Image (cartoon, rainbow, N blue to C red):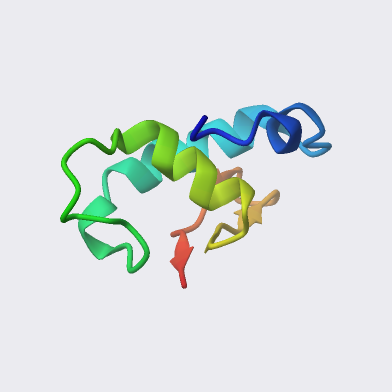
Length: 74
């Protein structure tokens, strides 16, 4: 399975913020270095979830501003 369910189930921070960050990252899929463009069988959202849970894509949440800043793609 593509999605690491153990990491998703044990995620201890705010899942709403994580989900919002993932959806904003889907819009930026062309800028992701580790995203496999050659294989057309890859689904976008499950792969973003996998990359974020494996810390290959980082996001920063600013609690004072109330919104997420841009994702940092490694």
